[in-house]
Figure (cartoon, rainbow, N blue to C red):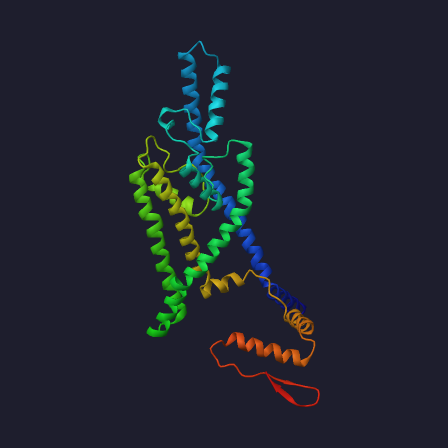
Length: 339
């Protein structure tokens, strides 16, 4: 009897705090996913890193043996300076001497990667003034970009998602949630094709050192705003039409980010995903909501006449195509006036 009562109490406690338990499970799953990724990356990449280190040490020893006039300390100073310049996007190699990182198109490409938070890292400001301006430019530009993208996505999704789904639902009679799911899948397939597969095929042709996998990898890393910077287009030796090529890549990145946001917003509007997200949200108590409503009403409406006037005004705003009726106000002597 006592065990049954205790178990019933525990079940009620768990049921009452179900969103909290779901959130704990979500948090624990995320940390497990991080650990899983770290284990996989370490097991896959560590052998390649070890092999690369051995190759570099062998090349260094071979160079010192062939050039006995140079000490190892002198070579270390030279390599340190070269690597420092390389981190700033400046290379001393002959096949990279013709490319400038801060001409207008390259600077435009850099500005787009900063504002979109992609940030490849292959080109960074060299001067203190450039670093300071980059901070100020980003503080204003990143929220500005988010605002612009949000406004664009809000308008695009009306014509790309909501109206087509509603049209098919009303004219063809299919269930709305089924139409929304099929539309989301088709839109996702179309976006992946136009902004991943086709550009990857183009990059594999335009970039001599890239295969299709590397090109697809660049597209995904860029449009997901990860921006690792290990692959950057337009940096090859004697790249043809480099200025125009950089401009095209800038447009591709901005359009691709907008397309990705439209697809994400389309999937987020699915009822199934909304219900799934609500599992992890904190539910508001009804008593608190009622208290907030009562407090709001008491502060907003000081008299019954003010409430009536406010309701009439709301009706005007919510029904703009309905003929407006005159508002009747009562005076103290019992007569009425039509406004």
